[in-house]
Image (cartoon, rainbow, N blue to C red; front, side, top):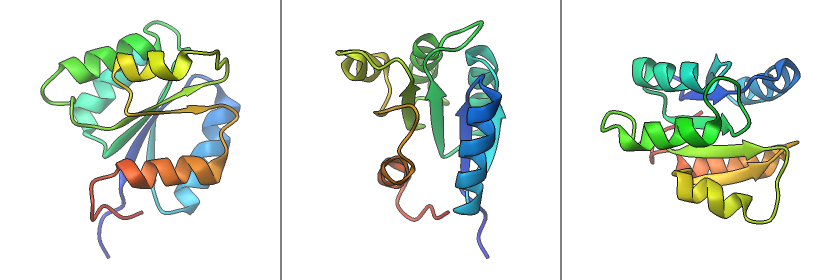
Length: 128
């Protein structure tokens, strides 16, 4: 059996972490968690995940800035990032894409739609 696809989930809400990481693990993904943007950037560099789920409202370093740092760095710029926001306002999707996110999803996430976005962004051949 091949190795599981690693997803970095950057989120500060324990309930969200518990719910979404468990559901993704049941789909066969290996989930690692960072609790703020600064930790997320460090873990992305250390762990080289296949994809990052980035909450945009984070303590210490917000998701917008963390994504900009990841996309500006040669070792992490090619990792797809899906921005997640509970406070989706008009223009947030465009703002997330402008910050470097490869896609955007509102919270609470619609799991099936999020899974489709994850699968579309993962490198071909990367399986859950």
